[in-house]
Length: 203
Image (cartoon, rainbow, N blue to C red):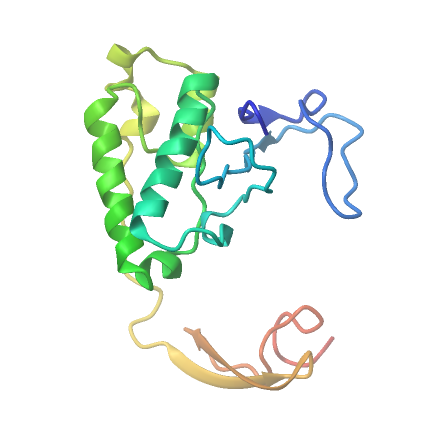
């Protein structure tokens, strides 16, 4: 989308056309936030008005082949969000994409450091933290003490079990496949699936 869209609630009408294959678009209000997957511009030269589709997931942009291309892609999309309306830039990709492409990981970490060094008004936050700020905006000087952003993830308590059972199971829903399941309870007869959620074959 151009300009990029901000997250919005479903209390009111969507600020864009409803897209999707056979999706049912909401016709009434819902108390839910929509985090927009803004299309990422994958043009090599943003000044050249090339008519190529964007991508929502970074790792689905099949024209990113080198770390330099990835770095330029990140800068261009950051500028597009930052210079137009400061809508949050969502960067969605699978961890394996970075793990399998060390050059991309190096470019990504370099880019993050560069953005933070050059922009005192940019933060890398979770989707929940974006919504918390939208609901209760703070200035640059206040955001350092913004309580929802100061929360830390604390691991409490012991793990559910010290030695889980490792079960090699099958399911008639996935014929011919052996599926591994780690569980703290006894191994079920079958792999739990849609028509057999307990794995006991009663459904």
